[in-house]
Length: 375
Image 1 (cartoon, rainbow, N blue to C red):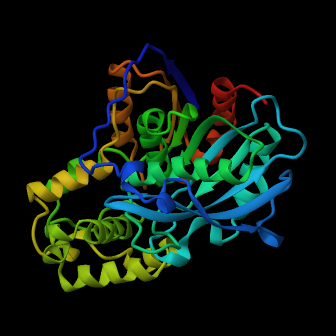
Image 2 (cartoon, rainbow, N blue to C red; image 1 turned 120 degrees about the vertical axis):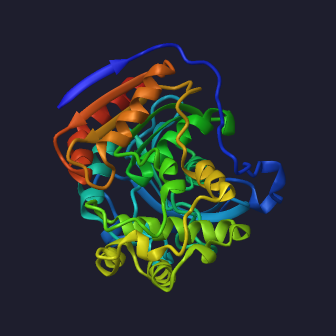
């Protein structure tokens, strides 16, 4: 593992998204971001060692076009909180799919329940997980829409604090894959979006970046690529665009194979969808090039991770044998963050997509201690 750390002053927050944020003022009183509409205590398989309380919440957040609901879970450490309340680590999860049954918190996941969450709780942090809008709630999940995912994370922290008074205002975000993209968008948007909270840092492993640059190059000529899960990822992205931006007429870009691919990802989770679509070349899904300026602008607004304007420290980890988020794309992101003077800690690991995330955990926890301080 190689590690570099670049630190410089960064001022201001640049929100470089084309899809307008839905501010709190636009929501009715009952739909204000973070408003909890349902609260259930978790038992059995969903309990975590070291958590005094565990609750699943349904709360209002903000999607691409306005208020949408999300679900999430909050785990609180045992004992009396430190002065100011328990600091919070918001965990932004990786790709599970876009169908409702794929919501991350609906399925017990051994690594997280037995390893990740207990380690964060032992470190003295409350843990808040968001499923993101449209996963298990009305509407289609806008996959890889970074601003929506960030708002789901931010509003999940608001919701958790509404039901758990022992939680403080100091927090950080930790994310993997899709969640790493969400974590970086949260770092960019969070300080201005939630000034009542104290966002201290963001840790991201395997963040999908620079994908928007590939959109105008895509067309029927693309063969099967030597990467993992790419057809399913592309189908989920297009399905999210079709739902959130109907004026783009995404169906007009799809062949019958493409239409079927979107049907698959809208009804099956990522593992099953990948098994169905792994051998489908992306070109067979597309009836014409994706070179319409409006489509590219929408993709940029969704996926382009900001590379400057951060006011908090960042941690980025990348696997050198990652075949889902290729290292060259992350290298470009890291170079641009460095050139902008971002307070950036970078780690490279020899593993693949998930292997690097697990290898990064000790470094990520050390980063969290640096920005949040031990409880």
